[in-house]
Length: 110
Image (cartoon, rainbow, N blue to C red; front, side, top):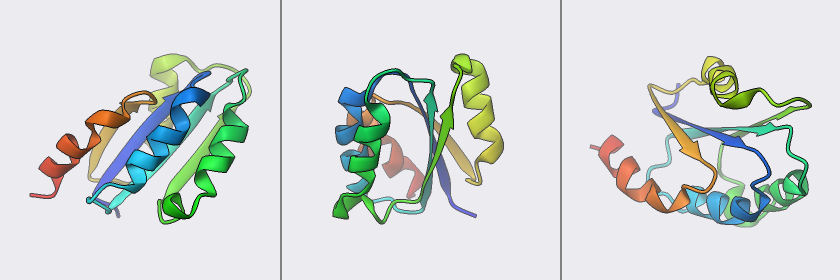
């Protein structure tokens, strides 16, 4: 079991994905899993995601990617990911919310 599960819903947020996964990989708190749900995006998010996850810096992340052919919406999408989460703590993160991570993870490390 991991200490924290980070749940991220994505809908047409390809412009945020590089920074998001760069920030996740730079965390000092490493006992985490990332559950990433693409909520039927129509942009190039899958291509950007694949590129971001193939970078050397992000390869150590434990990432589970779920693709949905139809939009599950905010609540259903998060609940779908929550059922898969193994962490003692759960963090729901917006795909554009990468800049706040260090503060929040530092509290888990105590």
